[in-house]
Image (tube, rainbow over all chains, first blue to last red; front, side, top):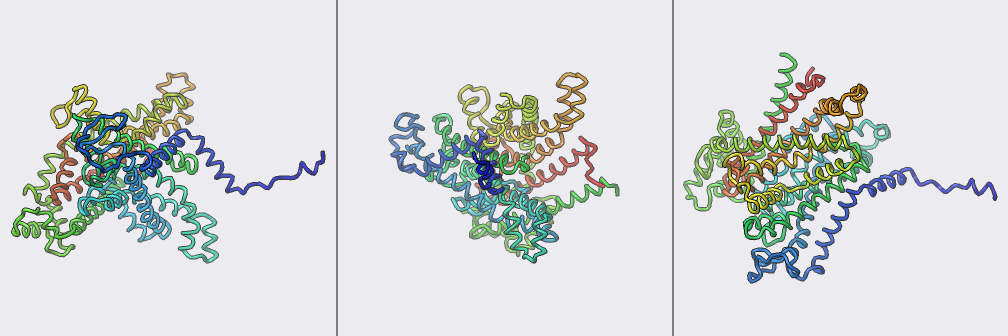
Length: 295
Length: 309
């Protein structure tokens, strides 16, 4: 046995990789988060592969097979127009899930730069942005979305934007706080001393460090935007039929609460599961990557 | 001026500025109505004279700053304008309906607070055991539940199947049960999550350990911890109120509860924008006032909190 061999060390993984691996492991040990990932993959797969999974066209009407209770042929039954509810839920994921994700992306794209500027620049700019945030907050997401569709009309585009606008303040608040605290960090001061421009500092240092909480917030807020968009649909002020959006389906089925309550079960359950999965994954990401964000 | 009144004046000034902003947003939105705003609001069957009348009464024939100024002056005089659909005062329409919304919101808040705190305390005192697991599950399920679906499920169970409760309307206390639960579950979930995490912190504090060391009953120790966990819990209940009002719009629609949330949806369907403006203003005002009240309550619950110097 040669002592030299013992002393040979495997090159250590870089510090950053090791911590993110550890965080990933923390996330993977979180049962709730894993359940969330599983539900999410399941719903997404059903939406993407819907044409392979169901023989029915989600908008094919057949009045002779209207109001059929769940059976082998129609596992979730059919609605008032004879459309297969399972097919509509599967295809509907393409709308509801996409609207939720897109709405949050819009909110982040608008809110993150505003928050960064507000926190980093400070002064009068900060005050103006803060007042705008206060105004948006006093509406609350659903009310704001409701007013926006009332003015700009119903439809997928309006609903997506309307659902997104309501969560903009969340992103402003979050990134402003991050920018405020990071402004004091030594490495940012060093970058300033080296003569780096504000934009470069914001992008390279502040934004990069704020990215984790932004992702956590985005995940949690997809749940909110899905609830808002589906809520608009439920009131008949969202995506319009025959498009199979989950909230819209629930709203239509509400007229048949005595006649066919099964029509109300599955679209609602799917909305619930989708929101639940985003919340579980968001909670898991927060606990693993940024526990300081805990309420 | 004492510190307290200075603080109050500052908060109220900020509130007024925010509300002026809310009014501005609403005025701009009405201006942004596609096509002729006056025609949209007056309705398709309206005669040209009626359209002109709507245009003038809303100030749509004036530049935006003038229209905005007029709305603000009216507001200062205690008027929210005239409903385009009913021809009545917006304030009166809201006045009829507001008590219903407030009753529902108060019941929902109490439901959420009582069950949320109880659930959170149970979870914290049984950390890691099955009670805690069930509590966490209820917590995350509660914030993920679409209020409109929960309301429908309750109707199917208690009105259609069991026939215990009225399906909707506002006839007596029984009709308040399902809307209260529907509206309160979200708050309950948020409050229970908050209570659990704060209680876990306070149960670990020295003074609780001291109380326990004296050998008193466990519930006395819990009471000590809860009293000190109260501020963050109260904050959450206050902040919750905004979300609650949003939920009230949907809950009232599901249960035909005659509050301003239901009126808002009806007004949107009627394109009655003066009424929409007024209701949104009242919702925003309620939210802002409640936030101030929550902050003031802190200093009552915990004298250590100094809002002003």
